[in-house]
Length: 276
Image (cartoon, rainbow, N blue to C red; front, side):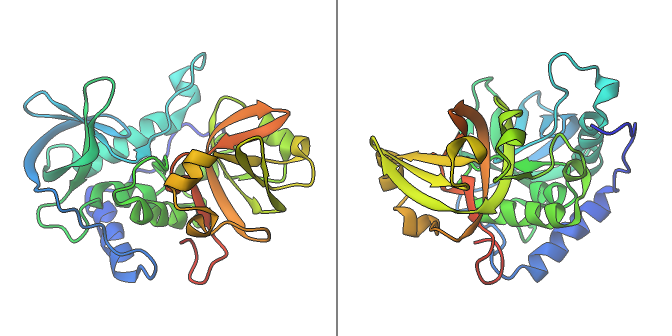
């Protein structure tokens, strides 16, 4: 984390204008449109960078995204992005009346609602998260299938411009071919990019390898059951030579690995038009 103690948080109108611009200019991912009926809610304040408190006492966590949080053992003043992301969500949503659409998994283990917030009759049902992702205050988790492509494309805008959290060494996109760097991030959620060296099958698992040797580079792993559920390697657009962006928690199994269980954990970023 850099020594910077503050970040400029855009005004809510700017955040929403960014979302509208992305919707208008998006070539590969349409604005997210959900079939679930919205509930009109009043936001009292932001609790952190991805969770708000409603005026009726309920808490809502934005689906499919995560804000930077101060790691255990660190002081808040050492982690300015924590406060900056909360201020960004407060600026965009605090005191606002918005539409809430619940996600396919409508609650989390803490009893919070999980869903999408957007301006009333907004063009994108994931509008609030889209705006914050585009400014680099959030990153996508890959776990949410609803609106997943829309969220990842907005995130890609911030990655390309190194905005917000993407400008910080702790969060920056890792080189999938740099095994030492990825091994040092064991136990953490990371985003990595690289070109696939090979795709192998062994002992009931598939391995998407980014290097000739496991110890020297990342391997994304999928069980046979997960691969069937996700539609196979062709559906994931995975093959040798493809340039991929992979996200997940790094584990050490001879070398650094990320277990893939959801399609949103892998993006083909050299495909025509950008990420799929």
